[in-house]
Image 1 (cartoon, rainbow over the protein chains, first blue to last red):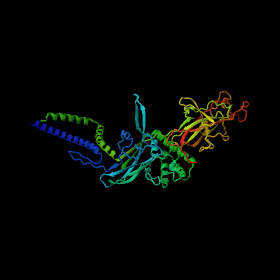
Image 2: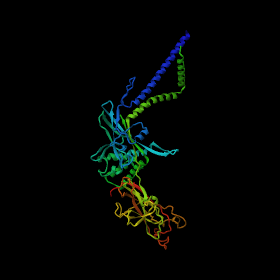
Image 3: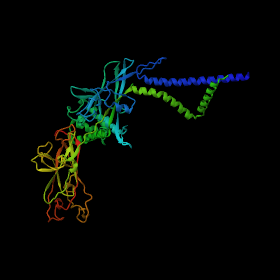
Image 4: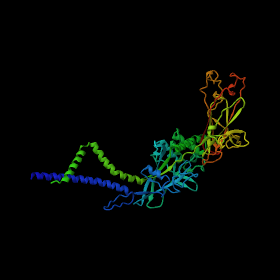
Length: 310
Length: 274
């Protein structure tokens, strides 16, 4: 009798331990399944048969054009974890198959190029959403080498040289607006306090067919930014001070090996924009051109990103 | 009674619990963190997928600017050899620049100052009636030599009667106590081949530059059309009666010196209306 009681107690304890552990295992399994389902569900709909899983809907969907860029295969291979910015013949980053200058073989960026990219942020459930849009630049270098079997191997690596990245970020200037009548850009997208280019407080209405346009321009010559003649500069002359301040603050990105102080650069460029001076212009123009040369020689691909922050 | 299968399960569970118990606190924390990470990683991937778009484009290779010799020859054929200073007073050296997409460029000459040559730069073009000759090695498809003639473009933009004004970067003039070719100021042991086999090891090359030379063909599509130039070397021949003691002896050219080096370099710039 006594032995049987002891056995019963043991049995109960063991069953309790088994049940407790099974519940824990089940909980872990559920967490894993739910995580995976969230990923598969992508953005809007979630249909799971057999049980009902209610997911918190993502608050918005980024919408772009429909066509993949010319270099989408390369983009996919980089596996950045973000979504490709789809383009069209008119709205692209010089990465559309029809965007060929001078009957060249493939599209691409070089000094003197400009264009527009667009996107919208569509709120999924609310009527409106207000977000910040943060623009970033990354650069990659493609190196082709010959391996031991005499096969050519192409490797694309991300560039972490901060000076070179500064060059690319500075020379590809972003504006919010462009006036087709005057041919002038306006509303420079400058840096915020963290040196990020941000469009703050952008409000979007649900399903409203309004896209945000980002005008990008890589000026070929410095005088397109500093010329004293209003006709010659690419942007609205009323924004001279903003642009010159932006250039001076990013002097190490605009001008290779610029040892002058920010104040000095600002003063020099301000002087240039009121009266041309060969000596001042040559000094900065040479550094501006050398920067372009460095970009061309050391960068193979560039990524312009737009990140939404609520 | 406990069934056999439960017994086995219990035994397995016991060993698992024992293993976990035996683990140090650090290992336990790592284990929990890993489980949390695995279950959250997929969720993060989904969030990242949502809030960022990226456009990738290629950066084109920068246009190049090339130096070449006259005619269709490569830079290999630029040559200043075989100058006999006693039989002539000038020599023309033809070279060319392929500016590609650049609307203008800078040309810089730098040269040593062993022989007292004066260097001038002129813009030229191929011209049947020209007086400057160049022996081309490339144009003849059979590999023969072709004598080409060039004449100075007296009306070329940015020139003075075809001459491009070279600005000295480190001028040699009386005010700096240094005159081209003048070795009078130097101690005997530094004068070229005067005392013994000594040479002036401290002599500085002279740099001069002309900026914003406009591309003649005004192509900015990267064509390989060439702009032609000549370097005109002139000198004043000395006569055999002169000695080191004569005034300005160093400014006369004699065939007793054999080497000078000249560098020609070109760099992209942008054209501006004068």
